Figure 1 (cartoon, rainbow, N blue to C red):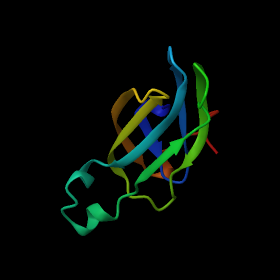
Figure 2 (figure 1 turned 90 degrees about the vertical axis):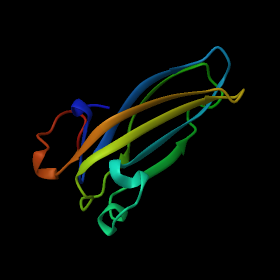
Figure 3 (figure 1 turned 180 degrees about the horizontal axis):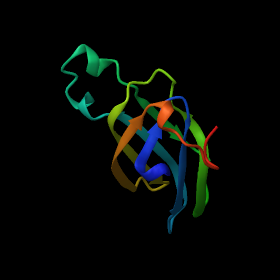
Figure 4 (figure 1 turned 120 degrees about the horizontal axis):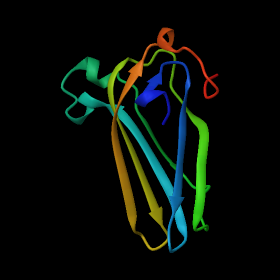
Length: 117
């Protein structure tokens, strides 16, 4: 992820990583949720933006550079602290996971670069 682990309301997420395996790769799953979504303790928590999708373009290869902007953050997404999870799976069922704390910032904070709109 670019932008110093910050994503922006109304802009796509820049996702880039290298997936490699000694077996054949299968898929990767990306989930993004608000930090407080672990407990859903209030109405405000339930209104935070969430993303959960499995991508399959790595299926059947041993090495793949993922680089896309296919995750679009809604312009009205609530800003704040979020968690980013990436799980890569191979065809044997083995998985590798990466988790990051990220910030969802308002659109006004976006200064533009080659990975934006």
